[in-house]
Image (cartoon, rainbow, N blue to C red):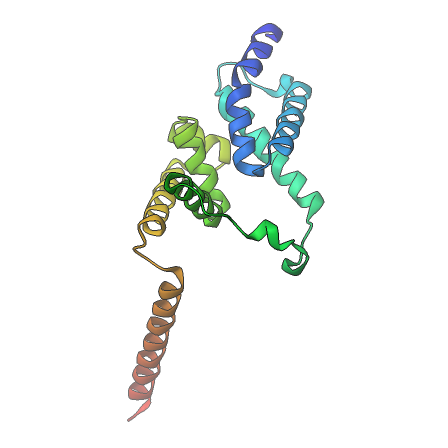
Length: 190
């Protein structure tokens, strides 16, 4: 089992690196995360059940390690402390701008949707493996990928502006509250 286990670890390293880079968005931190996840896996190799999905097991270890590391750090930075040069971008080629827009849109996605989309689209992971790796139902995994794709498409094509959606939602809530109040008043009258 040891040689087979080590061979599986080595073969999955490139996919773990892609997932780690998607989670951390920093190459050095991604490499550290992969190294830590592999160390955790090696320490827990007796808990792996041969014949089960090794890929999902490793992706789950990496994800859990990432979450643990986030909980330990919990750093915050005030926007005023960030150098203006970090916020400014120079004009560049159209394709490069589109990629930047896509990266920004990906950053806006909820973490669970971004992770699911990356694991399915970039890793080619099945929905079943994704569900096992993230500890959710297969339907939830499919839904996360679907919602992420739909949201990215709407942001990238300019279909929906999130501020406009918030305004529309607030109006609908207001209308619903007015109707509920009117129905309550009508029901209270003799």
